[in-house]
Amino acid sequence: DTALNNILLWCNKWGMVLNFDKSVYLRITNKKNPLQFSYSSKSQPLKEVSKYKYLGITITNKLSWNAHIADVSSSAFRKLCLLRHKLRYAPSQVKLLAYNTLMRPKLEYACIVWDPHTKSNIYSLEKIQRRAVRFIYSKYGRGTSVTELMRDNEIQTLQSRRQLLHLKFLDSLINNKLGLDPSHYVTPVSTRQTRHSHVRSLTPYFARTDLFKFSFFPRTVTEWNNLPSDFLQTVDLDEPNV
Image (tube, rainbow, N blue to C red):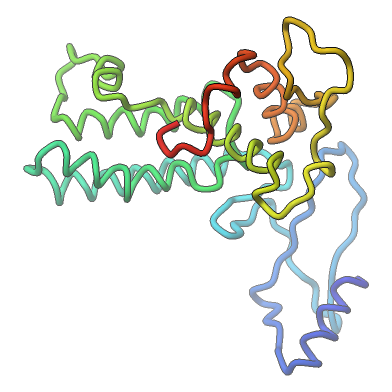
């Protein structure tokens, strides 16, 4: 309870009062038999929860992103229903603009944190965008290929966009554009370059669990190292259209 007591001391110093009826705590662990403990203050216990939404991201006690992606998909679908109602007769370019500014940001907010690796979660997100594409171009027939619609109109899959966002963020980190020390997170490969690597290759992370393997740094460093050797020399990741 030391951390909680320090919070209470800070609140007392600055004249703030915590509402313990609305305060909860989240225990994050994958252990089969986790340590059991509880938090309380002045004999009033805090309620333990299995998930909590913080800064727009739903965090669970197992660090699974299933609940968050379900929330994101549901929120984006509600927005799509609203756009269908308000822009039913609008031209495609207006619908596309509305999608890009009002709906897609919901599907991508903080996605470098929660980017899914399971097929079911990837499909849940892509399904929302594919429905939006049908709406944008008023193509609801069963014979219409949404994949072709996206290709003809240069609409990337959300999965491809998330991968690119990963690489852009990592590139910004490496080039000291984020105010963070990159040496705390990534290390350049010190061995001789091989035909399967490039001059900016990074030391891979070792991961024993999928939870860590598919988190940002292990996953993105692998994607970075797998880029073609001439890609980073010819493509500027800061370009808005990349």
